[in-house]
Structures are given as structure tokens and as C-alpha cells.
Amino acid sequence: GKYAQQEQFGFRIVGMRVYSPNQKHGDEGEADEAGYQFYGKQFGRGLESREQVKQALKTYFGAGLGQSEPRSPQANNGHVEHALVREVRIKSISSILQQLRMIRKWFEENTTLLFCASSLLLVYEGDLSLGVPDVTTLKMIDFGRVRRNSPEGDPGYLHGLKKLEGLLLEVLRDEEARLGLSTRSINGTSR
Image (cartoon, rainbow, N blue to C red):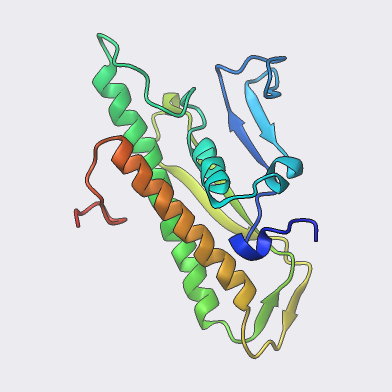
């Protein structure tokens, strides 16, 4: 098939656009004049291991920060920037997980529809200058091949949702560990 690892991962990344203000137009990495870097189908098809898929998700959620690690503390804003990184990444990943769980719950109860070639659109606003700490949206799209009367529901779509949820949980835990935070539940209480 086009993407041999889709069975293993349960989904594929067919593209993502991230804001990379430090990546100037014409630099390696193909950022456009506005500072957006595009990762297309070939990038997604090249993700062959679980770690590579996880790193792609980390790259996506690192957008707008200029780099994947927090910058060294500055005299005036070191603590502020650290808090902003935590706010954007942790809350955004948590919000996507909450939305993903709602979709997964629907698929667990679904006994009538089969979704062929449907997609999830994940939107994440990582611009710290906007002053809005948590702008995330997860939507199902591409319904041209939905079929009725599937007695088993859609085990393939459900499999992909569970795999994506597991990878996002790993990214969240890695980020919490990197920032020196205790492992938290999605609502922010310690475990």
C-alpha cells in the first residue's frame, strides 16, 4: 500500500503546517515568506517508527516556540517564557486529548456507520503573542465515503483513534517530564 505502517500506527500524517519564525525563507526546511514550514505527504510516508511519529507530533506542538526546547532563561522573562511554554503545550495537548476522547467514545458506541478514508483535522494555535493560551480544535472531515449498516461499527477508525490517543499521551508525559512537572491527569490534578 501507499503507507505500509498505517496498520501499525492506525493512522497516517498526510501533512502539517507549522509556524517556524526562526526558519527563514529559503533556508533548509522550506519555510515560506511568512515563516510557515510545510510537511507534506512524503514527510508522513517517511515516518517508519513509533518514535518518528511521536517526534512529528512534538514538532507540530512545538510550532511558534522557535525551537523544541525552552530557551535559556533571560534576565527579564525567563520564568514567564517557561510558564508560557507549559501553558501552550500542556493545555493544548490536553485539550486535543479531551476532544479525541469524545470522538473515540462515539466510535465505541457506533454500530451503524463505517468511515472509509475519513480524516481528523487538528488545529493548534501556538502563537504566544496572541495572549490566548489554549486554542485547539479537532474535527472529523472527509465524509464522502461513509457507509451505513456496518454491524461492527468501525473498528479500523477506532483503532486509529486509540493509537493517536496513546501517542499524544506519551508526548504529554514527555513534555511534563521535560518541564519537571508531575504527571497530571487531563483536568490538571496530580496522580
